[in-house]
Length: 298
Image (cartoon, rainbow, N blue to C red; front, side):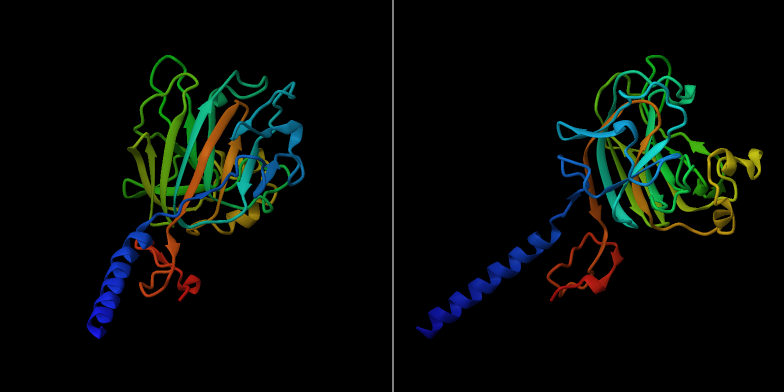
């Protein structure tokens, strides 16, 4: 009888041990959007108070976040961004987007079928009242214009610079190697963000851009404008940033951009790559690349 019991116990632990790796390897993606409302997001539109959703620019419909301008007569530089509540450093991000309709009257020519998602961004609260764009790294999203090439998931750098091809590059926008996506089709984009070590843009499973070490740029857009580009973009607290020039940015907020052309977003999901890396812990994940063992559960 004792032999049978010992055999049963041995088999039980064998099965338990075999199951544990499978459970620990399962990726735990979180949805940043609940599909119903804008809970967990903060809105900041230039020249408007925090969380004022001016003319219902940011809306929810059919499990999508929609950036629309139905109530606008003129865009009038009402650049807006909607920020997820938590900052992140090491993570994977994935989402789908599509451009729809026509650009709002008053939008700049370069903003036709143009929007983006900001990463490593300053917080909504820290934006100056008049500020057009947050200091951040932008995954620039462009729709095709039905003629010629127009890549998407490019890089733009409001108030920042990055290392590209091994050198610090102050170019404001760097083109990716993506295909051109015309029409109102959905496009799937992913980003692999490893703090300041590496950032990769992926479009429809193709890696289209790599760069690293974003840092604060003493010029908001270009050296050609000296200090005036901070003023032109409404950054009235520019000295706070100019004093931080050269500071490496390894974390920040994620924000959806409103830049005068209607755009829809859906399936916005994030896989945190920072967490408990102690294999003895219950919440250990082998895909974590940045340790935060304060989160370990035993």
